[in-house]
Length: 424
Image 1 (cartoon, rainbow, N blue to C red):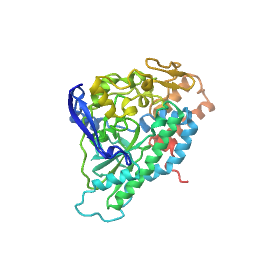
Image 2 (cartoon, rainbow, N blue to C red; image 1 turned 120 degrees about the vertical axis):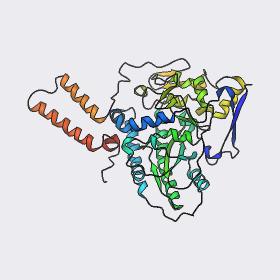
Image 3 (cartoon, helix red, strand yellow; image 1 turned 30 degrees about the vertical axis):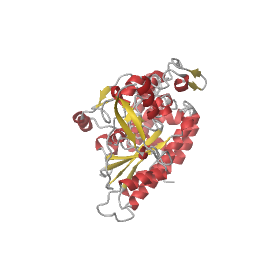
Image 4 (tube, helix red, strand yellow; image 1 turned 60 degrees about the vertical axis):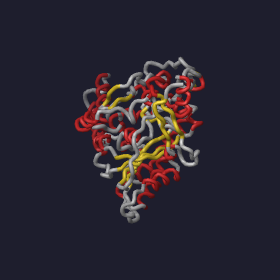
């Protein structure tokens, strides 16, 4: 039995409504102790915020997102999802301007009321922290209202469907979870307004910031080796978003769940990723110590890293109890945890990985403007831009496409995914 450094009592607000009301007490072996939350250098975080602000993936990787939408493996499923999700995205976009529907009770802290309501409507987790504007995307700075508090909420992704990853069944469950969360968060925002306060909904699809740091600050988990938040009850099997508000709430505090060190030792997701997209060692990135991902090798629909995570599969308490007793990571090296099947390629057990054609990971990258320029350059190099009227037509089309990209802000959300400026 390993020496226990400390224990963590997981509150009901991180376990979902209708679960066992008794809090889980998780033993953290001394050798897995690091720091509450994650290691960071605030001065360096501030430096990058000032000089190199973050930008949304919808702009920085417009070309990839457009490819995913139009030529991905599950295009029909995606099209249906976007059709159903569009009203939720539009409602979230305007939510910061909606006025409260009642007068607030002076001096009343509404933490417990909001937590209870969040669980009541169907969220699996809820926590509170300060909204950290350092993680706001550059293009969203004008959209985010100056509300000081972040209400961090998560919806659980169905357990059984998640264990079928990689599959269209699992992807449909993930997309449905996003839509469910998008509807629930609008309900929660309405409730906050009924208490007399503003509530701005940050849409799952149209995120305004990198929000995992806020979930970590709210004590809801720690970031795992695959880049997801690992929460104590659901692991990576949840979908996250926030509401910002001026409601007076008490902030939660970051927690050392032992995940920082556990991921160093476990490495199952790193070993099992079909695309080899995960790194074995942490790096300091923008002032935070974390695992980084090779994004261009992370293909949509795979998500094997989620499926093979022992915290997702068994829950953190079970994993830590086993580690404290044996010094071993539960499930590591077993078919039960590490095995998966890929359509058309077969089953892959521990130590086995699929092989792909050389072009499998050669997907479009970059901004809308960059992708257009690369496309024009390729046409010129291949002789598709001759002198005369035909060449002039190619340049006119390029100019029209570039003007549209500029009008849309280079955001795939505006250009292709939702047509947010279009009236129906």
